[in-house]
Length: 201
Ligand SMILES: Nc1nc2c(c(=O)[nH]1)N[C@H]1C(S)=C(S)[C@@H](COP(=O)(O)O)O[C@H]1N2
Ligand SMILES: [Mo]
Image (cartoon, rainbow, N blue to C red; front, side, top):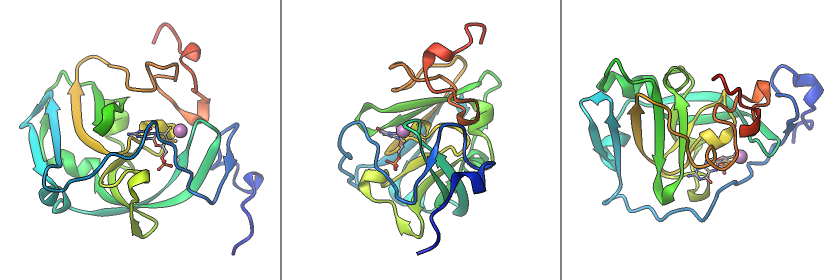
């Protein structure tokens, strides 16, 4: 085992109010949904052309990438250097053209979970749809068969069990964003709760 990580050695990696962990805690509202590869599909819809509907096999045939990033949960744990494998959003977007009115994204998941983010942050090069973590397939509890990874925002935006991406003109709040959590969720600015939101934004 390596030396335990100390937050002060890595202050530029650990946002304020966060504590490092080597574990990979599970944070889910409700149980992991059942995965049936014959019925599973992945859709891209809304202000985009063409709309996509991919089978599990078709999704797994998309170009693959491996990226390393940090993960910050609003409940105050951070896990550094996660190795994610899957499809970069920028590679997925090569298959479609956005309509000019598209400014926001709503990510839809099995079991009613969702998360929203602005288009420009969704299109960051480190955002991906992952099916493997640290060299293994994701476990069902961590989002298998597919989860979003958005390293620069609090991890509730990294939606598990993703089934669809919707492009919107106007922002629509997701599951936690309507339940008191911050619409934007930048961990470096500690955007944790909706009461912190600037009414002008
Ligand atoms: N579908 C879904 N995605 C979700 C959640 C959830 O409850 N349901 N929890 C979020 C929260 S709060 C966090 S911190 C991360 C945790 O991911 P992990 O359980 O793989 O550590 O998943 C996010 N994605
Ligand atoms: Mo979280």
